[in-house]
Image (cartoon, rainbow, N blue to C red; front, side):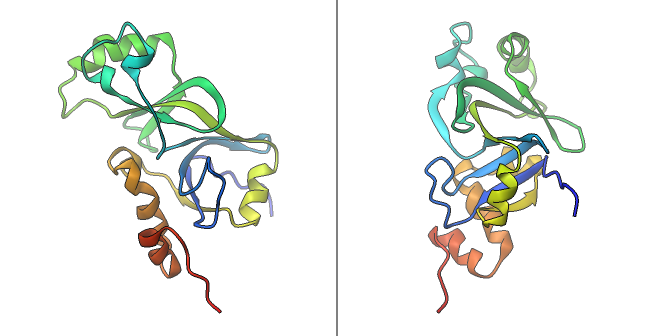
Length: 184
């Protein structure tokens, strides 16, 4: 079997995954090829807002955007995901100066019902060549195609349980309790 890319998919941590960086996490996999993978954890926060990081954003809706912890790699790197009309329903990129200007000056002027949802991340999750494939063979992750609706409109605290529950059976119990019971 040839290489299968899981870009634009969710990695949903198996209930048994105990790595504190990824326990009960959901990662949106943005890039995945034979050189490795890059993703952002959707359900962890840094405790910071955009206003805490950028002195030029002091008020308005952008100042209150919560900064997600995208993962344990390059914790000073910032990324942005913005809802759009593409087939994926979102676009992403490193956070650049033009994004800060947009968030400060233009984004707040868009009427709330039409204003695209935005998430900002500090750090990312990365895998080297074959690393993610090995984790998948060891059943560290479940995989589902990503949808913007799931991560823009589901409370981050609920996204893991809502996605893991889709696998049914013992995963339904795991979604409610946080662990998957073992059968003897």
